[in-house]
Amino acid sequence: MTTDEMIIRLKATLKERRFNHTLGVASEARRLAPRFGVDVEKAYIAGLLHDCAKNFTPEQVEDYCKRYGVALDPYSRKEPALIHAFLGATVARTDYGVDDPEILSAIYYHTTGKPDMTPMEKLIYIADLTEPGRDRDPGRSPEVSEKLKSLVESDIDEALIYAIGYSLSYVLKKGNLIHPDSIFARNYLIENRRKKLD
Image 1: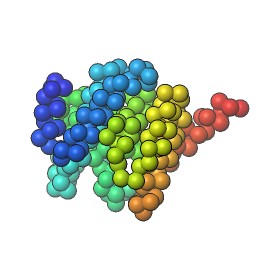
Image 2: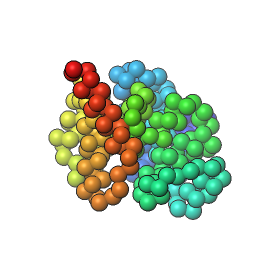
Image 3: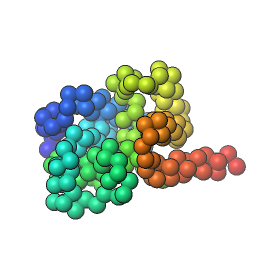
């Protein structure tokens, strides 16, 4: 499937705001790809498809999980907002014909992160938070956006620590469960930073 065909399908399956966000993430991922040492075309595809399962109904989620054997952990079962990332990797493979493990893994972990993230996983996590449309998110201050963008240009891992911290504080404010992968991801990055300073 070409990227143009992917865009047509996404436009038909996503809500307008989500579709616009998707295009923003794809564009941001392509722009940042050289900074992360990632293939530009792969970055663009991962950005396009990162939210491909975001607007699925509960019935669609259940159907895909049963049909393709997608096992959801207890946290995503209790926090449905997490499901789209885990399921999205399967949808990218089955519905969009993507078989590149680097792209699929970036989609899978773009919401929670994980310890020892690959450059592509880091890129999609960051691009999801720094695409220009995010500046209009309710409750996000201009300072947060500027800090993220500045850190991406100077230190990718510091940008990721800040981004994960921001995401965790957002989840805490909403009173939702935190997926352990996010905590493990942040701890891993901080431990690595400390090793470099020793």
